[in-house]
Image (tube, rainbow, N blue to C red; front, top):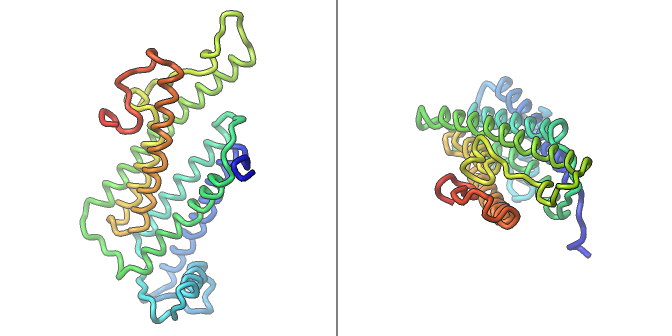
Length: 268
């Protein structure tokens, strides 16, 4: 019975809606905290910052008093990572709501639950690392700028690749709604081409991984939780990319480009 519990894949937009709300509120909260604090300390208990309630909740889970948990002043690097994360999920939310054609595909309820948890706790991971570390001080002058550069590159190419997929999807829908005598089952599908699709089967997955790697780099590679997030994303999307590659090869046979890799150009 559990295996048959599915929800529409159109609910993907809810992931990004949750991520945008949590990321946006945490960003505003952290900026307000930074502006109000003259010294590097936690806000007083009578100050209504969300992060104070979050830290109190974690301390309750750990069974520790506030004085027993080392904390650090919120870093500007944490604020930057939160802003970039929020921008990313807002872009994805806009694509899901306005650009992506509706689909009849479904996903397992467990996958839906994992997605919601992921987009709730990823921004929280940024603040947790920032506040519980000895203090984020930039160790190099190049890591954060390189991270931002990778983030911009990945975001642009992910948007382009998504538009290619959406365009193909719309064309497939039109083909189904206006069938011709000479049409075949393959007319409902097409091989994506253009941009990074010329090198890999799932460049949008590659760009998603690069986004989270770049967020980790923006924190000067000090946010350990973000590194785990990037690793989880890479493993999850790597498996999906391999399955997509096999589907393309089975569907199109010899017509599918033999030199096109699954996820990493020229490698895999």
